[in-house]
Image 1 (cartoon, rainbow, N blue to C red):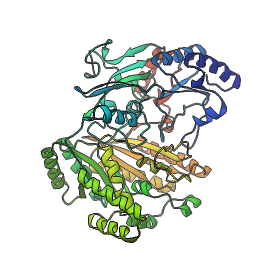
Image 2: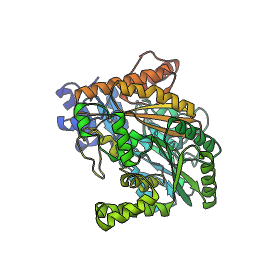
Image 3: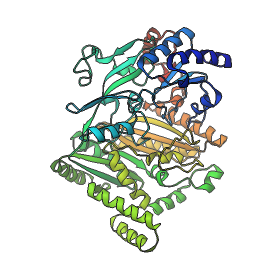
Length: 551
């Protein structure tokens, strides 16, 4: 049951307030509208919003849902832009936001792990470690610093460091099931000393059931932390044609299999890089069309953007990093252009950009900045300014800089912090596909995707991320004008065409949202049938996020 009528919402709101307190329930129209905003073409208005403060309150809400027959859709902080934000599949559902549950319960410096709740943000964990455990870092995404650490991990998101597989580095979950029972994965009783160090326990492992599904709500988890390296060397690789890109992917795979490169290297196409430093040309936006090739080439030349830019890091002692650098140079000789930035060079880049900004690019200061930059790189100052931000991300420091790309077609000028694409009316969808890590596969999927973007009159935003030594994540971004009904419709059709094409070619999505869960055939595979049977046993009333990941 969803909450379609005002009287039903009022009755339920009273019951929810009895559980969490009156100030932690929103059932009025403004509150519902704020928490129903999304970056997708279609928004689904929720029936109420509830903010529990403990596992016991989460359990009580689910028990009430079973009694009253309404559906609950949980979100950690609700910043899942491009995958559904805080929307349920159907309108009228109760949206549960867990941001009040924001305690860092433990940091074990000796064994390098933390135990946290779902409302803990990337910025919060970073600042806590800096202040109390500066020898440890937590991997972060390049999205909002206000994103949930656990929310991203449960969705199997990823970052940049050797611990960039976020779900892979969770260990020990505390979960509230649809019946309101609280359980721990790993078979660990309270006080078990290996609950956050040994993932599997004894017998079948349950952790996977609570990732990308609707079998329970994770209210606490252990997350492994990375020792701060003695040295970090950021590297970039520029590839300027399809052959160079394919060769770069093959070289990185070989280096990763050998253990030389352990970071999750991100390789973005020129359009994705452009979106970080430039708004969509206003004249083209007014006509609702893509940037034509010759105009895009001119912008690439203006900013010094290659066809593809890879960013990664080398970690370890000075000797280890030096050896890895030599191997990387050797492996990429004749393939792509490699540049390296240590802490000192990053500091110099930051001072150079500050000089340029203080002088507004004019006078003696501007001339000095231009001269120094010309000796270092052909890239624009706006791209040089990203280097310190990416160096920080490689050490677990969140940044707002990359999220600016979500505003590419938005009339809102993004600020330097506090960004919220759903609040600000941005149009953005992500299609996330897993492919084998070979240059041939990268070339193949690009050949499948690019003609579809052209057909629907969009530029292709693409990023290839090395998720492990054998797998690339192929992330496609669809930027659209959310104020244009025609563009919203074309964006939805493009997503559907891309999803259908990759499915037909045998590729699977590594992560989904509402557009992915509702796209294509409703015929269930044997594994989805089994998951549906388990769901029926655990949640016979289908109160917890029914249809999430098609379960």
